[in-house]
Amino acid sequence: MKLLSGKNHKISSKKIRRILIDGYSLTPTQVYTITQDASIKIAIDPIALDRMRRSREFLLDAARKQAIYGVNTGFGPMVTHIIGIEHVTELQYNLLRGHANGMGDPVRSEYVLAAMLVRLNTIIRGDSGVSVELAHTLCACVNARITPIVPEHGAVGTSGDLVQLAHIALLLIGEGDVMYKGKRTSAALALKDVGIKAHILGAKEGLSLINGTSMMSGIGCILLIQARRALSLAMRTGAISFELVNGFTDVIDSRLHVARPHFGQETVARILRELTKDSKLLSDREKFAHAIKIGQDVQVTNIVLQEVYSIRCIPQILGPIMETLLHAEEVITVEINSTTDNPIVDVEKSRFIHGGNFHGDYVATAIDQLKAGIIKMTLLSERRINFFLNKNINKTFPPFLNLETPGLTMGLQGLQFVATSTAAQSQSFGYPHSLHSIPTNGDNQDVVSMGTDAALIASKVIENAFIVLAIEVLTLSQAAATFSKTEKIDGKFSSQMRQLLQKIRTHAPLVKKDRILSYDMEKLCTALTYDESLDFT
Image (cartoon, rainbow, N blue to C red):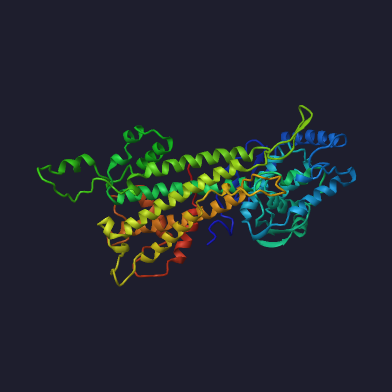
């Protein structure tokens, strides 16, 4: 179930808007928004174009006088091969065609568009030495929503996302296949339809198009927004669970969390207090503690004084995940506003600086850490699903939250298998992909990041998280209904809970008579994935 693919989901008004990019201030949210709303157009800041012109003039002048890597030399281990002036342009075309050899299923179009936007933002900083004309062509392709077909296999994430970015670069020279207006076609036909001329590559331009981390960081921008929504939803399902078990208010008391003042923990506790502020279901521990008589002998009370960890420890579990998300956002925001090319052009000091800004470990590591957090969040959700479905644990609800005749009807019994198997698959994806460093490129690239593959795996983990969260919200909706044999929500629940449950039931009504749930769950997953109301800052 491709929850993040298919039609563009509008996330704002239909009125056409313009976003000005300058190489320094692009945000992950802007990247995401542009990929989801085709009415948004981008434009390049004139100041950035001036920087590019100065850089380009310096590069072209210097290339006639000195050896510059990737301009008049071979690439990688072939750097010792000096290229004659008459072959400088041919070298750039050969670079693109020689690397556009990926295999496997196409990467989602929204990810490709995000990579195009990030690549444009990095080259307009002026450090790459490419022409203004190249930037205008790439900008026009983004605005026309022409997205190249990019196979998933190929990048190792050092010297940039070479293979995937080469497939993107083919579009600019009118080669390769693209997705345009919902159909696969040739780049040449798509460019002709919108009146964009194929760009004629100049010195270094092929290298600057593929030498960077724009694929992994472009995907990362989209993953950040989806992860935010998943975490926001997980806090809401946590709050509902807390209400359903008549949780003790000291679990989210500010004094408890000030005593262990991690930012994420305190923030999650504060959000849970806000979500449940008008609930009439939460319990005062002092009242219950004093109701228990203390005698001489051991006695058993039916009052459960402490909830299971998946309900009692929500701030302590989701808190570090929130902090990991914030760190990943900081890393990716820096990355999409950075020069990840090699070499870079230092016009002020009239020199070329060679190094490794194309290495993707910053992004790969941040995404791997975020992935691990999302997996833990998924397991937390799966455990609460089990709690409410297992009458031997919750001691309150009917088996599998059956609203009809347990034994004759299934309730949510079958759906739990889906949650269990989905969570287990995510666990298998948990190993940090950035640790899979295999030397390549004649051992020139001897330590690699695997950043793009890390991002694609994290994408699957986030998709799985929404599947499990969707099952959890349906479980909670079903549990709430057991307080009443009608579909009306008891007025004792918090207003936040009532609103969420009403929204859930528009996509997935209560399960009374057994029915096939796959269709409802797919609609619910998609609705939750693209629900703007779950966004937080």
